[in-house]
Image (cartoon, rainbow, N blue to C red):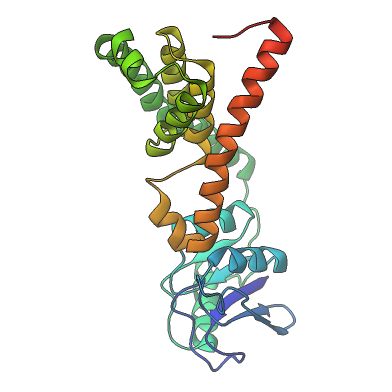
Amino acid sequence: MRIGISADGPSLDTKVGERFGTSKYLLIVDLKTGKVETVVNPGASSLSHSGIQAVIMVISKKPDVLLTGYVSPTAEKHLTANGIRVVQGTGGSVSEALEQFKQSLIEENGGRGNAPTRPAGAHGDSLIQAIKSSAKQFGSALPVMLTVILLLGLFQAFVGKDVIASFFSGQGLEDTFKGAVAGSLFAGNPITSYIIGGEILTQGGSLLAVTAFLVAWVTVGLLQLPAEIDALGMRFALIRNGLAFIGSLCIAGITVAACRLIVGGCP
């Protein structure tokens, strides 16, 4: 098992880094061989404290576990998605943190060390876990489905053609820009954006506006911008959102042009 530990220095005697993205070093300890690899964190010297560089660096080293003081939710999501277990709230020296983790690992495995075995009946347990996981996913999707139905009803009741017409001027470039702005300001499940976009199109909105709205909804996130800046750095977050906004305008134009070329016209 390979353990990654964010650290303020290059040795096991240094303190564990308080924040994953800004820790100067990452120490990789192989529990089997005892070998220690020291890696400089490229994100620590960044003016924008970009945590994305640290995430990429850790993923490239492929540790099984990461011990650190604090890691942002976004960075943790990327790490766990790549099979890396994240343990936050770690303090003290690197060697102390490593010993504490070893002890917790032994306790988790019932005193059998760091090589857990598959117990009898594990296949049945896996089936039960799969059923529970499927039920949980359905339960988490149900509120989204109900929200979409409710939102569609409210949209049809309170947002009529007059409101749509007053917001969208009928001018192609202006409507495209307004659609991109509207999509950037709101956040939610992509399915919701399809419902809103369909209603805007049905009630007189242009395909330019709707396409820009849909693309901006799923690529630009102004409401989540503070969290994105904290996780990935200000420079990266601003550039990414800016390019995504410009991209939504370009994609809207390309979509309408392709539509007119293929079917000879579009809304």
